[in-house]
Image (tube, rainbow, N blue to C red; front, side, top):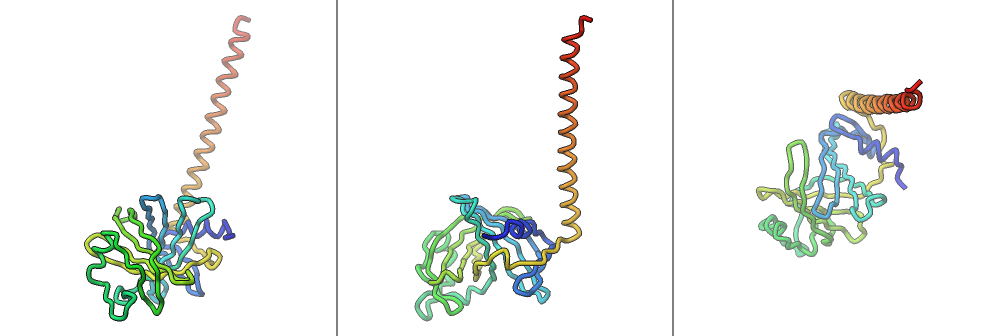
Length: 222
């Protein structure tokens, strides 16, 4: 089972933080979330290496079993030109966006020397600092379920394609919080502690008033 501590560290990553994966240090550039109509939830971190290469770290939760079905993925955007139909020369680029919005998936696609078979379609809202946006996703898997091919249809006719592989939280290390995020975490922790202390004093004050009231009722006639 993945370490709860490791998962918690990864979930706290925000823009400006750093993490190491595959012997490469990555800086978090952005954090966003996504939920579809079935309440399938995804958290997404945009990572950039020192050389400028970008990947995404994804955390997905199965709504039917949220306590145990948590999956992590490492993803890279590829060109739509690298994707074709299963037959040689089968160009799917034209009309693909309309097909995705109409819910008419191809049974199989070819990309990066692999054949992928359609598994599911989801439509939901993608939330980031720039606001909410509707997105339709087709998910394909290779025969061994080692690699995933995801096609995303966005507003305005935009289609993005991602090559993705499953990963484990233990494969990530050396989480470094930025100074800004450390201050924010400390402030939040201090505020929560202060709120707890306030509630304790409120509780003590309330019980003091109750006890004084009872004493006055019992001995008020003396």
